[in-house]
Length: 219
Image (cartoon, rainbow, N blue to C red; front, side):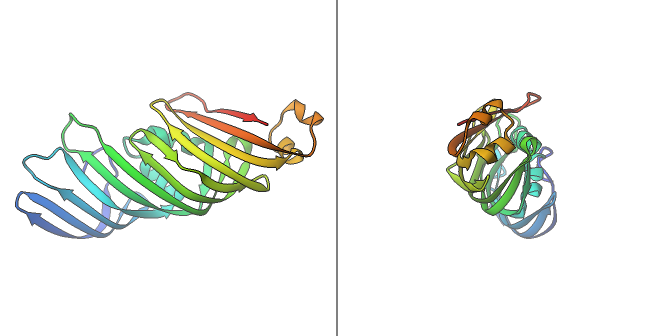
């Protein structure tokens, strides 16, 4: 245990090195919740004058397990909102750079990148499968964000971008699909007058807390 608000590390094998009044722990393996720690380094530069415990490392597991891990941290609001609206499948590796407070007057600092390679998910409210997800999903203490992530839905390629602020995470999707596929997935009355194929933009807004997600589709 290194902080009451962060998941404990168990089954750990590590080398511990004391440096003057500092501490360096080279973690060879371990587990935290259901996530597997492939490698990590834990450092305290000075026992006398340090505000943070620094952890850098690689964590691997199923995407759902990694989301579950993050839901047990002070950053849970962002990941709670995401876990409520999607069901992920596939594995990921996450590079983590954590600065965890050792005193009450400072906040945690987080920099993480989850690499997705041919992952899948289902948007629960739409029963919409999204396949072939490839790209980097990033997060910090403000929330989730990304450069363009590539995937496929409704039989065509899509582009996904994410960003967050203090109150919500926004997921923006741009794609192209046949009107018949859109009509089957999104129940809107004006599809009856459309035909052929069309570009579309989907925006999913995930407020933190108890507010409900909001989905809009434009074509």
